[in-house]
Picture 1: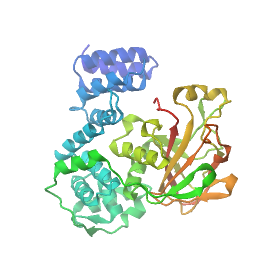
Picture 2: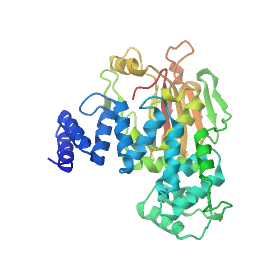
Picture 3: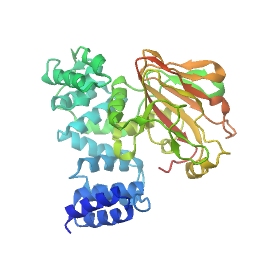
Picture 4: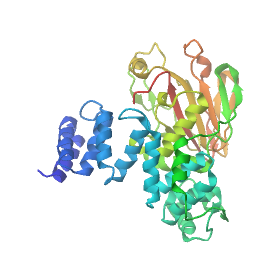
Length: 408
């Protein structure tokens, strides 16, 4: 059986509930030199499909297949940033990204541009995004429309992006398609690539000054924590994966649907992340004053008119049997970090019933609060709710942070 046939048979085995067989077939196909099989085998190792999780070996297969499979290269950079093979290596991940961007890869140009926006390196960001947009990259064009700037405002890509947004009925279509474009001071060519690499490698972002909302639970709001264009990107990159939200059954620990929580949501699993998502997680952890390695993966929450999340807490109740496995794995959810990605026209605040207070962030604003007391005991005062959206729609980036390293 050749590698292509092995890969197809492996995929069938997984779909028919025979994951161990599927993993064996993927390994055989990967060892025969098939790059697509090597990537699929790496994913199986990373997620424990058909056998134990082994991210160190997954990282080696990603490195081997990254030159031929774009998805493998993206996940390879994620694995470097998170240290799957050992020490975390953000610098190497960024170096690989800029090499790809330098070769003209649209996704890499856009990714590097958005990272520069997070770092407030706007002139470099505009140049990178402009190059990506001129190759037809839709997310880069959306970012420039949000910024209302472009090196060549009359370039053909702008109208293509506007019409594409409207045709696709993207939730941001109306507001972005109406944004004008002004000429920026950036350069479309002649980028100093070593300087770009050095800038991204440092990832030295000025800290945001916060405003205390509720002292009892250390709830602090952070205006302008992320650029609006990055917020748009997080929304767009998660839209297709949105599903009806669930809650955790306290008795079984299983995820279930419940009218208590009405929204759509998705989690940016490692294979769905690029370095922009990694950077967003880092920023949100910094706002919360917590180490990045303790965070769960980034979530996108999407609320339509009438949808809400009734009062709840984010911590795992220690007395509920269904929480024992999670508490043993990575400990308690000590903090929550939120960023408003899009604000509802009316309603949709994050309310704290015990304090009769609500946070109504604008796109890019952050909010953090503690779910436990200084003693480590859970904090019932952290009870909060996603208030019903009365008009428009709301999107949030949500991150739960544990008291020790998160074992994904």
